[in-house]
Length: 149
Image 1 (tube, helix red, strand yellow):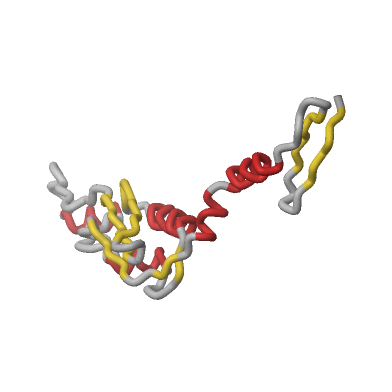
Image 2 (tube, rainbow, N blue to C red):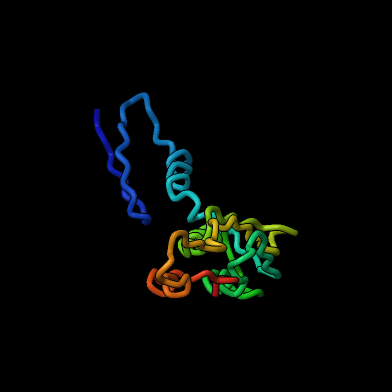
């Protein structure tokens, strides 16, 4: 049994056994390589123009914080790969339990739905007769924000 080593421009090498009863299936090989490239190839091919950004679910985190991390202006061409990376970036802020990014309206409107982590609304000190609550808050360095940023 002889083997032929094929090297493609994509720097992919495949070892294919060749004998008198087998044939080289180039179409199958190309399909396999395309499948291996996965979503990167698909995402580059499916660029769409973003016309609108809608943010839902944020009560304490301001839209500007999310948009600042998103960094995609309306009118820009986007793809699935970029959208996934931006969702991860928004999630890395640490303010959310969940971040979902979805395309709507013929893939021209970006919907960002977030689920915020619980926020401390109040702190009550019990048993502090000698030190005021304000002093304890300063010492503990706890901030109770109305909105984040």
